[in-house]
Amino acid sequence: MQAQPATTAATVLHLARAGRFAQIRDMFVPQLRAMVTPETLQAGWEAGLREHSQVIATGAPVSEEAGPGVVSVRIPLTLERGEQTAVVSVSDGGWLVGIQLAPAGPAAAWGIDPGERATAGRARPVLAGPARL
Image (cartoon, rainbow, N blue to C red; front, side, top):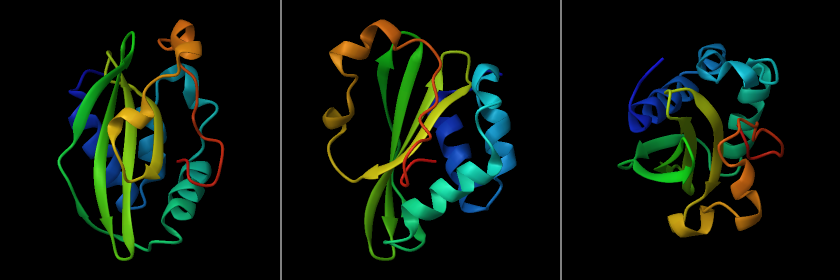
């Protein structure tokens, strides 16, 4: 699986908006797939949108290196009642390694914590919490 990170992120967002969470699960790096269920992805998506309602527009994706072999793509979302950002992390092999709905704001706030740099290239889920996909 090889795709540009921004293309992968846009595909994930399109699938989430269409309710096709099983297809999103299949895009995860194989090591994480067993930990991700379509139901968990759907619950995270719905929880993240609960306060703001549906996505009505998306902005241009912005990509940045998130660690060795991982690119983080931020896509601004305009919702019926507010704004959020979809943050999609993609491996250099094109596999999904994490997705999250985050508050709208500057990308610098989402850099990797220096304490995490040693594990930044390792696959790990980011599915805990009500606003995570």
